[in-house]
Amino acid sequence: MSRILIVGGSRGIGRAVCQAAVAKGHMVRAMSRSGKMPDNVGGNCEAMKGDALKVPDVAQALNGIDVVVQTLGVPPSLDLVLKPVTLFSDATRVLLPEMKKAGVQKLVSVTGFGAGDSNKSINMLQRLPFKMLLKRAYDDKSGQEQLIEESDLDWLIVRPGVLTSGPASGKFRVLSKPAEWRNGIISRADVADFIVQRIDAGALNCEKPVIIRFPL
Image (cartoon, rainbow, N blue to C red; front, side, top):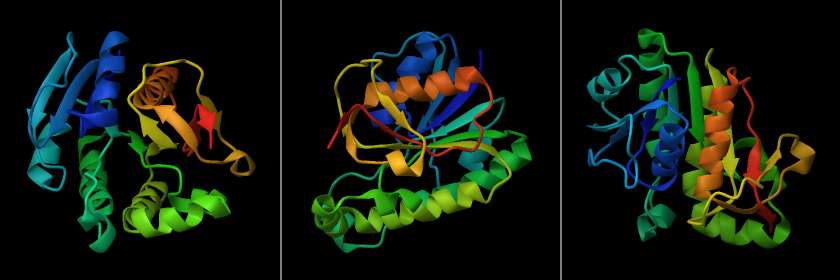
């Protein structure tokens, strides 16, 4: 059993990770700005109100934790297209030194296909809409990945493709080699299952796979 802090745990992938982790017997702390308990999560789950950009909130959330799962997101809006995005890198700059102070060595961070060096694997048909709609967010996610890679943590960067709200299938594909990387579709529940499986396995091994079920 691990004690897991999920940053952004009230919705999306964070909520799915809460559900999957509690189902496997882990103790979960779901931190979010709202402080709401994630839907359909029972058992050992504690909801905590906190801001991922505020050092005191992050320091408090890390108390007694073994593993951090970072599942930050920004809502779709014109701001995502027109304004700079800094949430991902800013929150990571807060998190990493606080993890070191707290003695927490394991970090799972969910970014996405197209972040970091997986950007080179976007095909020509998808590259233009990706650049028009997601470039600012993914530039910041690339910065987030670089910060994590430069840390001395045992980390796992998870890069899902296009996310859906479907159920867990257990049939997702883990594309670990750059030559395999491609975009695809995957449910948040499958991403959550993969994350919990890796936490259960022990070492995270500083890897950055792309996760899909159906290729695009």
